[in-house]
Amino acid sequence: MQQRRIGDQTVSAIGLGAMPLSTKDDRPAPEDAQAVVHAALDAGVTLVDTADAYARDEAEFGHNESLVAAALASYGGDTSSVLVATKGGHTRRGSDWELDGSPSYLRRACEDSLRRLGVDAIGLYQYHRPDPGTPWEDSMGALRQLADDGLVRMVGISNADIAQIDVARSIVGPALASVQNQFSPGWRFSADELAHCAAHGLAFIPWSPFGGVTAAGSLSSTAPAFAEVAGKLGVSVYRVTLAWHLAQSDVVVPIPGASRPSSIQDSAAATDLQLTAEQLARLSA
Ligand SMILES: NC(=O)c1ccc[n+]([C@@H]2O[C@H](COP(=O)([O-])OP(=O)(O)OC[C@H]3O[C@@H](n4cnc5c(N)ncnc54)[C@H](OP(=O)(O)O)[C@@H]3O)[C@@H](O)[C@H]2O)c1
Image 1 (cartoon, protein in one colour):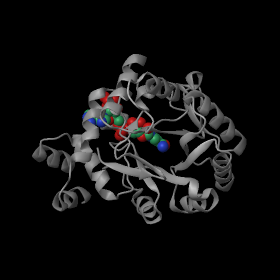
Image 2: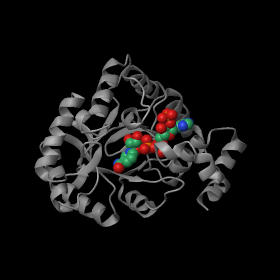
Image 3: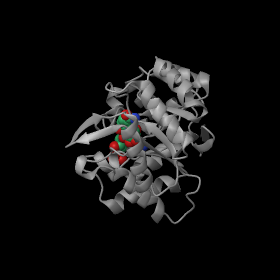
Image 4: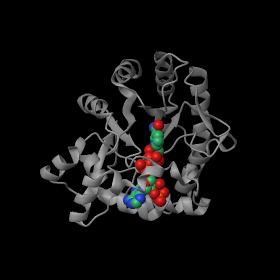
């Protein structure tokens, strides 16, 4: 498995997006969900992306973090090199998604995530999404404080534009390690943020690399060029898509979601797929 860097940590170039294990309508039973995490680890995946808000609703807030923690604890092998990346700042009201980026909320959320993950410090703590009700600077100050106080080892931001990335760089400082934005064949609006991350040595973590849980099933028809290249290579359209993500820059670390072991097994193999300049030009058109 190819390796990449997030801050000071080496991780697999493909991570596991754990969200579908909690939010997918037909999500797997807990033991099957753990088997998906185990399949990822068996395949050499050492980055698992979760969030406190990945749950069906408010009543089971923290579902995904607890599931990831249980899966790591029950894994037979060594998990010491696994980076668990979680997020705070999204709240749930019923099944709705809301936001709270206030410093007091972020500290409380981080402390709850620490408890659920059963760790002394969170490897990568990401601010989930800008809260229009809280000045960005205040949320960034809260993240800086979490890092200074040792509750989190590295800080990430998510759904941020270039101006927000630059404010985060100045306030959070060297603890800022990553930016997680949406980026897929059908959603390339974060290309400038990706380039900005590459210029400043920040990892860029594309979320919903196939367009999201619902859209992923029709990727072949929505991204025909990717399907065509996949057909010629005799691999899945998902593998070609992730190889295309990886080819954008060395700072890119995609986190494909999976609720079946076979999905993450196939996705993890994308790090062995080298696309030619000609294929990449076709996919970038
Ligand atoms: N920061 C944010 O605001 C934000 C927002 C959304 C998501 N995320 C993160 O990004 C991660 C990925 O996004 P996502 O899960 O929404 O969508 P996605 O990765 O675009 O699509 C996930 C779906 O693709 C299918 N899939 C994955 N690999 C496959 C393969 N090799 N072959 C066939 N099918 C495959 C899976 O099907 P099965 O379920 O059948 O395995 C899964 O449900 C999330 O899990 C989450 O960690 C972050």
